[in-house]
Every structure is written in structure tokens, then in C-alpha cells.
Image (cartoon, rainbow, N blue to C red; front, side, top):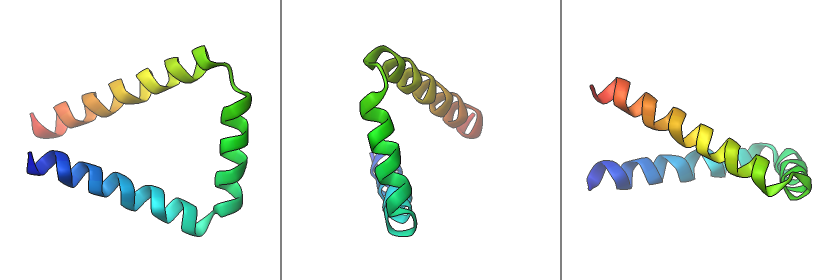
Length: 61
């Protein structure tokens, strides 16, 4: 359980840093996401989740 909380905390740190350093870029990214079809976002989300799972699997062995 502590690994999950640690992972969520790191995710928040990375997202917060992006908003702090590149607020304009994040606004543009959100605007772009609103214009992207849902199916494309869904496929991209699944691909990123699978890549993250694979990375954790490799690292944790």
C-alpha cells in the first residue's frame, strides 16, 4: 500500500512541476486534449498505462 501512495505522490509532484514551470504549455495541452477525439485519448491512455505497468514490472522484477 505504501508503494501505491508513493507512486501517487510522485505523480502529483511531476504534474505540479509541469504546471509551475510551463503554465502556458499546460493550457495548450488541455486545449488540444479537448479537441482530440475520445477514442484517440482512450487508446493513448491505455498505451501509457500499459507502458507504465511494463516499466514497473521490469523494475520490480
